Length: 235
View 1 (cartoon, rainbow, N blue to C red):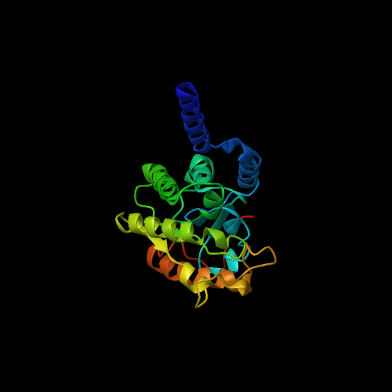
View 2 (cartoon, rainbow, N blue to C red):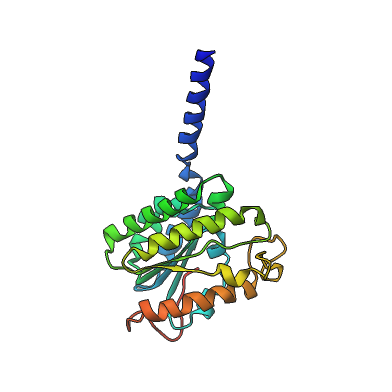
């Protein structure tokens, strides 16, 4: 019996260690595609970088939503927060962005990460980026409540609170809370903000994000070399 107990403890610990040792290599094709695009069409300097999961990837209206800024979209669908950290040296640091907007977290929670782990992964991203650019402004868009993942609402709320608290204690790190505008009076996600899958947003949903990101950019990406007319973007 004692031997069986020890074996069970070992299996639990081994599973936990594996869960926190993700295989980032599954995104190698996506990252190489970004690098090929950068080589063929060098991205603009002093741009605002948007990075994270599919909610960034599918933000096709970035250029028109922020017409006075150069923007770079480096979202790769299905990714976790720690994936952006793992590839930061290839899809963040080379651009020397004037400001960075991050969205990730709901895939993490869906995959079994705790709210604390999501916070720590964002902190690791900030640490890695700030090692190369100590003063770059970084904003985290709060984890969105969605119809498809309504079961995650308690974890989403907990993670957002932890990230917000951590961000407030940092210099030039912002937490942009889009969640309150995305829920109804009963605290449930508004279906009219999403496409058919109930997870990804339609233009009405993204408009709520623009309302949060726009004022932050006005305060933190106001250098003359960042603003421009017309907008330049990368595919």
